[in-house]
Image (cartoon, rainbow, N blue to C red; front, side, top):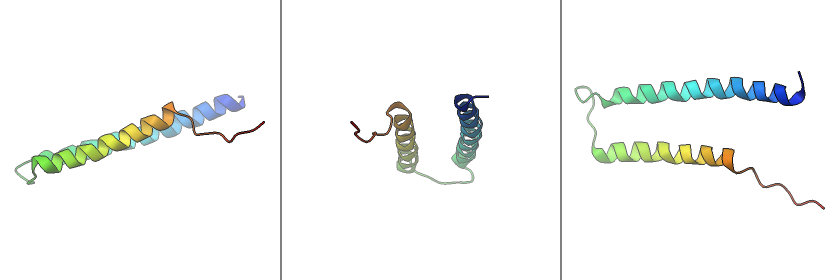
Length: 73
């Protein structure tokens, strides 16, 4: 196996694991929507999902825009 395919496999395994963890946590967060057990306002919901949306945008941007490389002649 060449170096690139090893990196791709390592990425796939780690990204899959981390994505499943995020999805599980989002499902658990959804459990808080039960109004017979919890009380919350629309403002609370906006704050929660604004924070989540912001972190998603940040993570996506890291994949789209490579880190700045140092200038070299």
